[in-house]
Length: 285
Image (cartoon, rainbow, N blue to C red):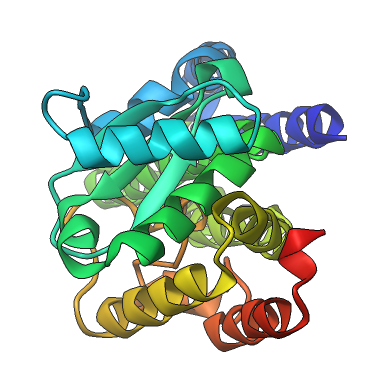
């Protein structure tokens, strides 16, 4: 099912790229967008994980550099009966984490420096187990593709805006349609938000439940979510793009357009479900 959703997502984004290309520079822009779409459709599948990690300054760490983190990830991966993912640390004080990779064999877990400082061992294990669940459920391919191309749509809308400013009063009939360019400026960020919403919020509930099973501690993950949510409301991420908000365990961009399009279920609801799992023992099933 994820493969079908990925194909539909790529088709939609390709159409938007072509529309924006024509809005920016007419026929020449359309040709440019066709080339860009081909490159991005190929690159999103093979390299989107590397692009997102680079966007956030992800640094791969070994057991020598971060022994507790890597050992914990290895143990949880064994408990989940899945390949050991690569481990990255983000140079961010905002506590958060995400997973990426086109398959479980190519998976990667990235955690911020702030997360490592804020959470205790049980809470950190809950977060890592949640991210491993995303990898195991193969959510990461479509999530990372959406983040990469939605970000490109935002940049294209900026190009369209600058193109309109520099065209000024040019009324060349062969040039791009200024109304189309204006629509492109408006549509691109909205489309990016809709694409994020298209990444089913049920994935987060499923990853929470599976993460609780892997770590054996629903309350560890619940307490981590509570801490991360509280910090995100005060201090957002310093780097990156709101178009990638859906990748993180909690939305790190609470203002602006990221606040208009919810990419995650309400954290309070997620915590309540985890607390119920802890009371009923469902996570031991």
